[in-house]
Image (cartoon, rainbow, N blue to C red; front, top):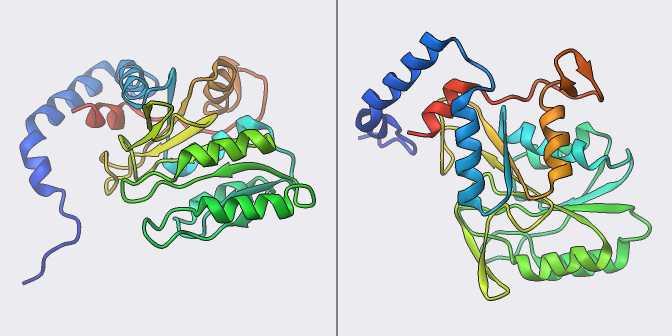
Length: 250
């Protein structure tokens, strides 16, 4: 007997009618991009993840890419992350001409080892031009964020949390719980079907409480547009479509 590792069919059978009704309304409205479903999903995700803003994008990979673009890191600068992750975590900075420095994992959680991170930063912060850290929260478990954020503050580094596999995870911090994606300047989510919150295709979200970064990411996801046909910067086609947003809200 073959048992599939991932079987989404039972879930679909439970919510099929609601999904089909939502999709029917979108086809009738013909509002396929940047519509009401997307706006409501952004508001709901922002509230759930305890950030001021959430910006829907086309995938978790593009969420990483557009987050790095928004930080305006110079080509040749370095980003620290873990080798135990999906290739997009390193691929996104590589596409922008950034250097990737790996810090090994700790054996219990398989997440980035913050003790080794501290050692790496003390040795290489000046010669390697390290500008950012991308901690990856895996299997619903968060990296040790309190010491990581303290290191980021000490060395003046930006933090992009890769929470593609950890939406809703929490970490105790300053007498409260920190939600995955809310501790750094930016956080990212993936809505690939196999993720904790999965859609019916590709989709992602950028999390931030920085208004300036929010405005820049909104521009970057739409080819750098400030308004229609007026482009302030080079961006890309990174928008989350209404069909995915509707499915994710069911």
